[in-house]
Length: 123
Image (cartoon, rainbow, N blue to C red; front, side):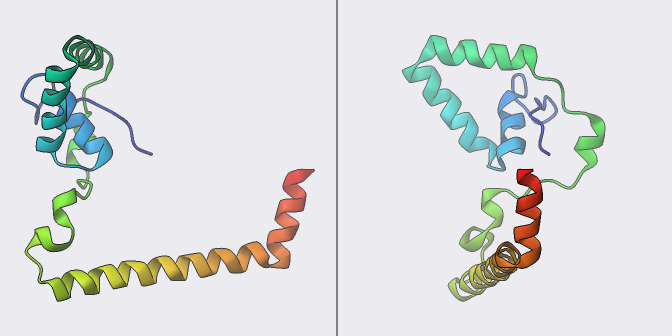
């Protein structure tokens, strides 16, 4: 359950880019770079969208400021300063976890209980 807010506390102008970084889980410099590129190549439209977001997006609530921050792109893999072996081990662990989750899902979908649940939903 993510909500898009503007974050003036971390923002430079209105906090729109900072709010987008929280929503999408990417770094603020990347969103700002995209916003500046948009101003260069599609100036009026980008400016209009930014101003509309500034006006219509709510400020980020204080409780959300205290919440655990979402992982950023830089917190993964080699950008953490991990060795290639560590990054590979981390990726292998994530893939193994996904594989286990997928196996549980497939087992439930093909089970009699899963079929019964689908039949009840169709009623």
